[in-house]
Image (cartoon, rainbow, N blue to C red; front, side, top):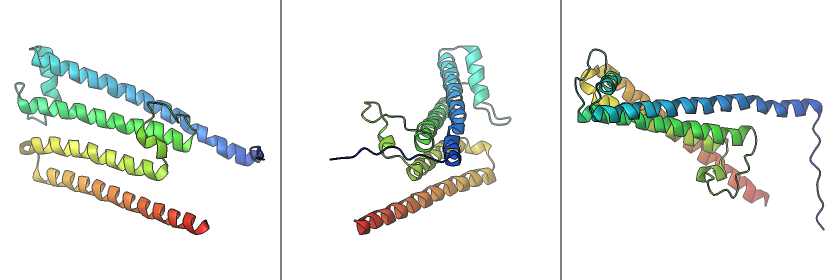
Length: 201
């Protein structure tokens, strides 16, 4: 016959320390507001891009200003200009994805369970999320964002100094190596835990 176990009663100090996790709630709410700003920015850029393609002069000038680098400013809408704007939109989407991972994954890991088990829209990665998995996924997302910025630099390579291109490439490689190191450490920790669980049983 199974016995029901009552929750362990925490001491006042332990309870206070445990409740302090809710101090992170305003931070996640702030990130949701930042997500709203990104959504607004995305639609402003998209509307201007469509307006420029349809011949709207004000939208065209805004788009040309957005892709200008220093004194180098295109004077008309070209395939390269459109590509740079679209890459900017993709950049916003990837940063937005990063925000979602931090908001949902961070809240689920460090604050409170969301109770999404069985929900049809539950993200696949959330079913096995923990601090290590979250770090690896965030690192991969940062690499994706860095790749977009590096591609934009390569497209406009004529307007950048070689030192700037090399610096951006070096930073991207550092992000890549950091992600590999984090994933490798996570694999070691997971393997060690599995071995310990096997020996325990």
